[in-house]
Length: 117
Image (cartoon, rainbow, N blue to C red; front, side, top):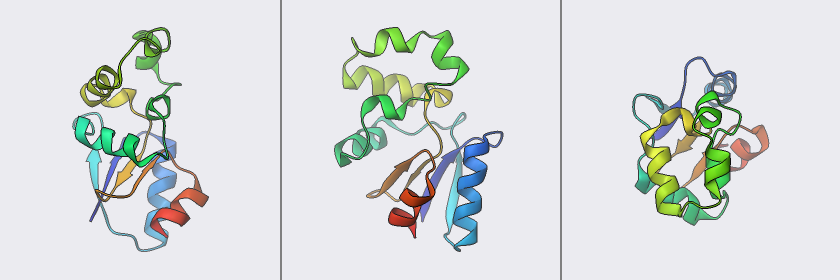
């Protein structure tokens, strides 16, 4: 079973769900605001090599701007950044979809096809 970390009011999450539903891919929805991805999962995503640290952040989000993360990110260690992300679901780019070994961050149909198709 794959976990779909998303936010109901997010258009990108809706598009990703529609894509998965249209292909009959089973998933479990995890509210990213109430239950952000764990530090362990975020580190696995980084170790996978498909995503860099900045790509895990919702850089267009209000919380990102309010917390001035852009100004602090370059000076943060990976552990500090992952701790911040795992504590604030709205800082995470969404959706994050994972089966424990494969992961996608955000939604691009071609990436979903490659990973979840």
